[in-house]
Length: 222
Length: 223
Image (cartoon, rainbow over all chains, first blue to last red):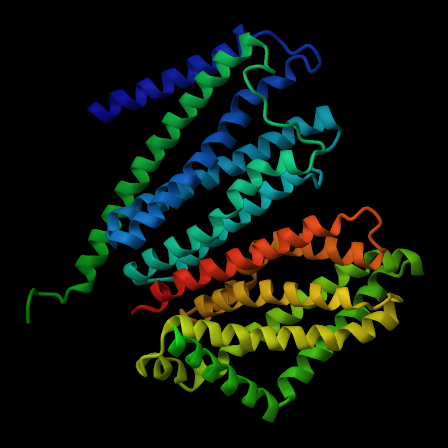
């Protein structure tokens, strides 16, 4: 019951934040209404990096404490982070066509993000190859640590190589009427992402319980 | 610390001896690299001066693909004959094991690059210089430190071998970018002194990859 209420609140909050972004926020002086994709594109990218950072922390926690629950969390945030990265890439591409005139360009930010997507997809794929839960947790955590090296590169790419993708905006460089809806949407998407992570962790718990039950000999102790 | 180095050197010696006695692996990887260099020039068939501009990128791609072939094979012997378990059961320090294997791969990849450099100079009309050799060494260090770690990871666990390029290549992209830029600048006589920044980045990557591998290898092999 409590979960149902939380779900309804999250969806309503997201709808409200989107309504603000799509209706109340003023159109951009240069791009008109096209810029409104920013209210999903930017929060997706932000939250993806946030979740990958969480994955880095959970990996460390697992490697230090060897508690299986940290691996459940690591897997959950990595999967949802990957979906958000994919969303940011796809929406960016949709926006790029009318504004830059192309779907895709080998801009450092775009390339680095695509590489990040492949890296985390590789980690999740490799996890599928490992049947033993403890090995899977161990290797998954180590790989996540390695792959995380690229997240700061993605973040700094627009500063290191100035090219097509704009540098991070700050409240000083944005119209004040756009800051609030952007923040609201970032919070809404974070909420939904955490909601999915929570379910993903429950799923991992059930799977672990089943795997443990299967590994025991039938008919109890011998 | 001392025994760690001794173990690493013993493994290096073992691998180099095997390599020396059975030269077929080096020859086949070298021929594969040579073939790639030829294939690139056929597939692209562009003007000579454009080819010279692309030389750095094509050379490093060749190195990357041939190194992958070498990395995949470097653990095959151990896996087939069950030597891997033997080495671990002997109480070898995992870090020593990793270092030894890494040095052996470094030798192999560096030597391969030196061997490919001459046909490269002839085919793509580039000038060789001592600076180039330093860059080759830094590049091979990065490829072999991260490559050895991922090769242990993928060959050590059943079914993972297929994933080696998928996991390794994207990780090597920053390194590839830096090494290609430095090589390009060296070949084109760096006028604005941009080399140093890229060399720093390259060295930084080498150190980071090596350190992270050394720090995590024990957990990885701890069964």
